[in-house]
Image (cartoon, rainbow, N blue to C red; front, side, top):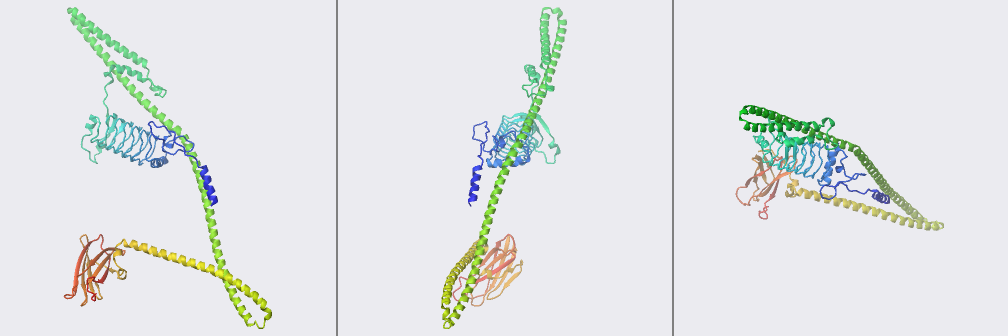
Length: 602
């Protein structure tokens, strides 16, 4: 006992203190509720350097959700692979779930406001009632997903896959629609904020299941004005071709701004010169009517040149727009590579964290092994004490036998001494000594008898306790049986035989009363017909029929009572029908004199 207490105190002293995750939330709220790993300043879910793509992480996510009551706010779950995970009602606000695989996940009512879901696979996921306000759904796969009643206001939809998605009553108001992929199985009834042309494209009847063309992928893209419509914007677009930071696209995609600006400026100068020349020509024609034919020809030539210049400007602007799109795509790809590099750099740190956790677990297992060894020692000590008690009891029984035998021998010796007392006066002293020994042995014998009496009393008490326990168990079983149909059978039920039943076949019973019973199937239950013949000057009896199944368990009880008659026919008949889910296999008939019969005629 002392060793156990000392071990517990040592374990209490060396138990490490639980630290708090140092993650700082973007909004005002309490501290992070998740457990902090040893040697880390942030929990597993707020540490971006720990990879989340391993298979065991999905189980840890489910455990963390249960422990923190669904709180995974701003969790870093990049690359999480957890198909079918249950995160209903979980708080994943502003969580980073880029490149995660959550196919078939249960996200009903989940809070995903502001979450990063770029390239996340949510195929066939249940997002009904989920809050996706302001979330980034660029490249997200929502094919076959259930978005009924979800809120996607202010969400980003760029390259989002909505094939087969069900978005009944979904709120898309304020969402930024760029490009989405859909098919004829995509349903948006009652959805708000859907572009008109996309809504028109999906307003047709639902296709049949066997319609293969309904699965054909289609792309909706937001209509954007041609870059040439805004000349100033087209001229300024060349500024976007240069990288805006050190993480810009590769040098092979960079475009020099000088030549494009010079070309645009030259085209603009030609257009202005043509316009000026046309105006001068008109004025000249008004001043010299005789040269109007020549001036008209020159003006037409100038107009054609201006149109050609304008077409060249438009072509250059289109090329600028394509270059801008290529630059944007390159920057997006580079950002994705940067994200992947950050995740890969965290793998080493994750390995270190797991090694530290393994060492902690090994220490815990060693402590548990020490506790098991201590318990084994305690068990061995208890077994030793039990053996010693058994040996002591056997020794006492042997001593009692020896003392009893000695007492008998002393009695015989005393008898012999008494018979020869007249002849052996010299041995009186020895007789006195023997008498004293006898007295001592008697005292020891009495002590042994007292021990045996105490042991016998204990045995009787234990036997009485066992008998009381058996009575209590029988009473408990009786109470359990009272919950069944057998509680109403009476004391005579157990003494009556079980009679096998065959549908429609009569069952006859003899004795003081002649009874004929027919059990047959009826619609929705069982029917019984009973005929009783009473002896002369006897009252009609009360008859109880108990139906049993094939396992001899009571199913139904039928009670038949007849009014008392002193005269008339000695026959009485009755029929009854009861609902029963299966046809009975046995019946027990209990006959007792009627309670209404006069005294002396029962």
